[in-house]
Length: 61
Image (cartoon, rainbow, N blue to C red; front, side):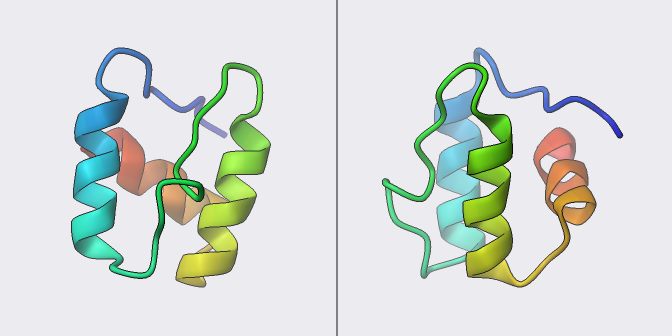
């Protein structure tokens, strides 16, 4: 599994995710260092995608 590459540009990624998935809220997209699994779990629940699919999508942004 790839590690998420989100430090530094998280605000941009967050905006793109909100555009792609209108049902995501700021609370869903709260990122805290070391809590990547929680973030991925929330996104997985809201989008219906697997964790690997979500990681790939974030890493491509």
